[in-house]
Length: 246
Image 1: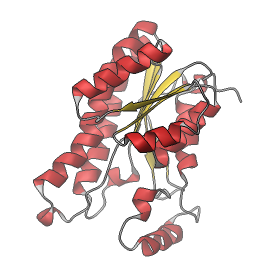
Image 2: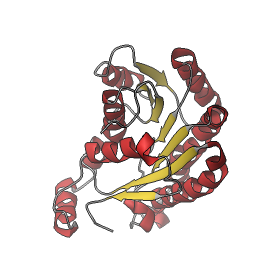
Image 3: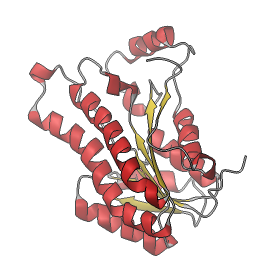
């Protein structure tokens, strides 16, 4: 199936590893230009080297810094002449029961996930609106339903869903769609670094209707569809990619 992504330009945040890397790999395979945005320049460059030559750009940016976000978008415009797709994927965890959670741990999680999506969207939306075509996908999480020890992460991921729905109402008039993907347990380095990873994986496999842990490519496939021409009449939606686990 032709997704109609050849020649489109996509910015993906948090793109050096894990889900973000899988998304850029998938979009690049579809013929899109990709901007690999990450705070880790070395890792971003290493990943970009695996993508189609001439169609991958590395941009080091802290998504909570408005000036760095603007610079990243300008770099994409200069290299490829436009921005058609934004995937707000940057995120991190600082898990702790709330009575022991520091203010700093709350702030960094909420800022990277939610403020980062706001700043990146604000920077690209005028260009999408002017060209009357755009796709924004926010990477939420099944955790938006709530997880113990993740009040900061769950709140931020739930906030992304509200952000998605509000923005879809603003952007639709200019044929810009805005959707969210909510992954379940996905096999990434960040997840594998969690304490008791093996027990977490075994529990997820036992409680998931499709009895396996998700892979980054499962999320990348969902994103590729939502940013494609095939999804032009889908907006304001949340696509759970969880193997049926809620």
